[in-house]
Amino acid sequence: MDLIAADGIDVRHGATQVLHGVSLRVAKGEIVTIVGPNGSGKSTLLRCLIGAQRLTRGRVVKSPGLRIGYVPQKLHIDPTLPMTVRRFLDLPVRVRDADAQAAMDEAGAGHVMGRQMADLSGGQFQRVLLARAILSRPDILMLDEPTQGLDQPGAAAFYQSLEAIRAHLGCAILLVSHDLHVVMSASDRVVCLNGHVCCEGHPAVVSAAPAYRELFGTGTRGALALYRHEHDHADHAAHHHHHHEEA
Image (cartoon, rainbow, N blue to C red; front, top):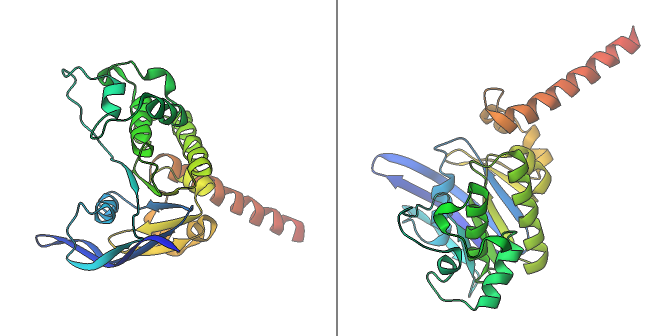
């Protein structure tokens, strides 16, 4: 049973077509990751799904009473504004202390409850956003580039928390991400987006697809390039070895 489905979505901003004929579905309990270059419409697609973006064409269908937890890509908090983490968790709806603490523990940031939001590190800030998103006991958690600006270990730890949360809450997770090594290890399904859906499926299938290789060729920075390089290198070595045996 699909929790949420996008059906033939178009989005235009003036003369620019941002999304074209995009369909996507997320079933109960699965982790789906959307990957794609900058400007490929990933954030726009998430905004369509949560109902914050007007569609030019198509529709979004949600299962009745669907609860969505959303972690935005950037949330600017005025650094001059005193606000503790605990107070932040009460926005927009006040929550019980015990629930706030449980969500913070689950997000792996139980120790920063009394701190000022402005004093948190990038990783702590993301975990507080995550805690706030799971307070509503969502059926689906949507996260837009949640590990942007975190280092490799920080990103890996954040994704581990997500998997633990899925196991505990039984929620689906829809993720926009650049961290390909993580996508490959943690996703049930990967959707490759570039204004339209180029390819989708199991991570191993997608990473071998020509459309995917076109988008994430050797020019991509960081983990993407590394992932590709290691695998190309391994293929090459195996190929070379094979010839050597024949000789």
